[in-house]
Length: 77
Ligand SMILES: [Zn+2]
Image (cartoon, rainbow, N blue to C red):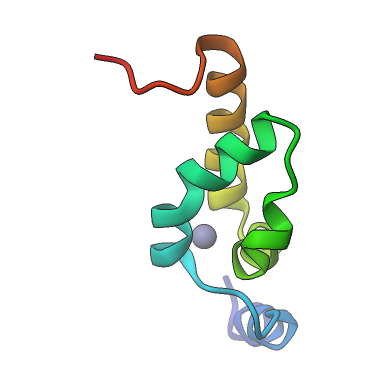
């Protein structure tokens, strides 16, 4: 990533964006709500903002939703 790309990324960042660390903590709950056709973005607007700007977390989110829909919300034992 060039300096210009990094700057551009920074300038486009939503101020509500909570960042990767907090996003990963809240992602399981967010994904369960999304898989249950809830509206997690109302409860976690900072995480919704983060998922719009972070491709890595968005991929994790998609994978989690898919897994929850396929296997149910319980943690595998
Ligand atoms: Zn992230």
